[in-house]
Length: 585
Image 1 (cartoon, rainbow, N blue to C red):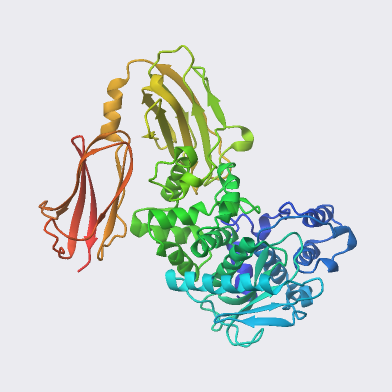
Image 2 (cartoon, rainbow, N blue to C red):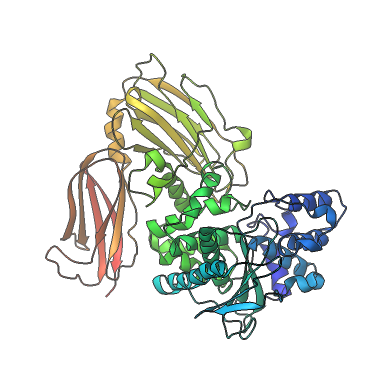
């Protein structure tokens, strides 16, 4: 990327990118003592911003170059890529791009090397950067496993070659040497790829630390190689949080059995009020859930499609809206469903959401839990007010001695509230029932949850829109009453959800998805434009939950149907919901 467009997008995207120059008052220290000391010196005016950026790069790549007061031991940083991108781009925008000098050069003291089909690994067996041949064996194997996973099993573009840089020809170079701050690895962008424009793709190379366990070395290789791949699409740092989300997914692509990501899930499930675009050294790794959701809910190619679209713009959320439109989703509806999926983990796992959710030990913790009613007006804890694309979670338990069978909740939220969803767990009954509050244009609504006297608990999930202005306050109150059993039947008829099929248009197959708030008789069929039955996909009783059914474009006789307009019709306890789809010729 050239300097003029870089400066321009930094200014234009300040409203979308929380890390834009104009909004940054401090740096993330990521729990690393040396970075914290640099922050302190910057905050007091002892050093200017440019010098702080230079020191941050030194802290990771060459700690011995730091002033002694900043040479502090300790730290545990999974990936230093975002720190490098931040420093390089800010210094370039300041007109100080040459201030880093040799810090941007490739290491030259690693005299041993190995060449694989697609990589060159540089290392040494002596000195402060020494590793063993066995250590290199692990990384060598991980290189080609990652390459095959990304480019053969999946559909990611091979990153642009760097010519003869580093030796070999168009090989991705990996430099194994000691890194500061406990950094496991990082990917460094290097040279623009002509022609520039049309988009800001760049070549790059990888740094890997010398002291990793075998499994850490494997997933770090996959993680950093994913960043090199990303540089081939867009080498900017505006969406560094999404870069890390996807790099974590890259680890799973290559090493599904290691599951290093599980150690970061609590950083996502805990502070659910954080905005989706948080990058603090933990949250962005735990939010592997976002590309996982996109892949499992829709298809694996969707995440790569988003990166392909990012070649032409830094407006990430505009890109997401465009990429999700064929599936009948947008940023807000996808974020809302992502957070709903997050409820069904650990002991709440129902086998219908995240594939590995049953192995996760992390889950949402309520901000407030009530067991006495009426509650009076309640608000989220000030420090836990949900940000835009953030959430809030509250719980309701039965009041001891009460026979009231209905929980009535009144909600007064901001107009930018996406949705308020309730999850009821009945005592001794497997599964959960979802209830969806109808919100008016002001973000206000009332709902009654039946069978509260038989409930183990009820949880309220509140999700805020991309278009909120920041951390949002809201008010809710709860009371219990009796005699709302008839409402349960009404809810069954008005709260069934049927999603748009995906993919749409249909080439050879598509998936139909729907959600039932309670058990009922379900009839799911495909009809043509005249209403004639084409295929009955399901007919029978189903328990509460979310369902997906594949249609292979065949009629009831197994014959492929002609191209044209068709309709998916779900009939649940006498009520019908219809979704249109187009079958390609």
